[in-house]
Length: 138
Image 1 (cartoon, rainbow, N blue to C red):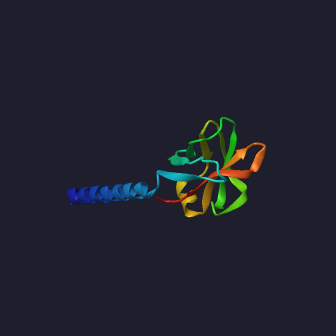
Image 2: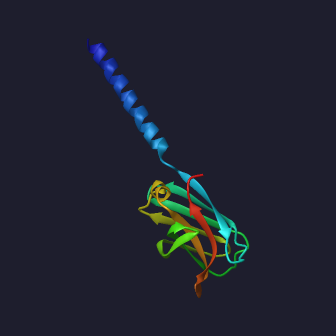
């Protein structure tokens, strides 16, 4: 009788552990966003979003970008219909690259909503967008 209880307990623990692994695998761990040039900038590239323990790491890489700082944000909306107010600030793109961590945010939450990464021409010309990419599942 005791060995049957032990076997049933072991089977239950294996089943619970397997369910936990399936749930853990369901979370999205990385997404690549196509960044498309706007306003004749030629600044095409990618943004890679990776789930980390403290938030979402965002690595932006653009071709044909200037050396000067270009403010970069995550906005609510899509590239075709973007909210002007940034939702999350990112490190400015310089020489075509930036790396940021948006703390307290999950990649799955970003994917559930409508968000876009937007790059501005410069700190003195925030009204001109030079690159944009919609955050969505591949």
